[in-house]
Image (cartoon, rainbow, N blue to C red; front, side, top):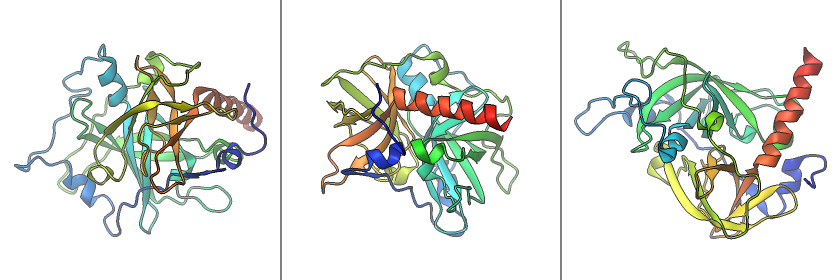
Length: 279
């Protein structure tokens, strides 16, 4: 049973801090990202996800292929983090705190993109425009929100960095989940921490379940850094255990916080209730 009252984020902030969003620079916010698409010889990476067909029977590839990098231009330094595709139609779940927003919880992003990785290398494979979806009174309560993936990004030369098939790799849909984690079991975290290659490449870290508090979170020794917010955490079998969201406030940032599947389900339930009211 979840011991959560009021704002989940408020409960979880005791001893921990939300991961700050990545800064993506000023001016042409996506220039460094597009530069990262190039090989040493200047050739763009091809897309192995839907054009050549990766083997999604490999659970490691299936998980990695669904974890995206998110970059938003808000007219300033920009912001970003990680996300996970939860629906083949291009719905991404992430932390709401990575989305620039005003005091009324409305997004202030001018535009946003998501990048999909080559799951075997973690390098950028595709880029798409994306629209943030903040649910009033719900997203910031749970620190969870969505993005909707749109059209492929097209550069000034007319090159499209993506497919128009409209179908995206979603391990969350067809994969497994672990709703009963145990102390000491293995944890693997996927995301785009700034500390790793400036946050443009998918990064994987390993650890264990270090603690299981009564607030529905999972404490892990797997490295969780700025930019990991909204990624995915899985067990030794590759089953989802939750979404990395916070880091410890000690100097070494030695422990990370994962929002468990139970908290995610609470968010989805409240989102469903919101839709019923608004519709």
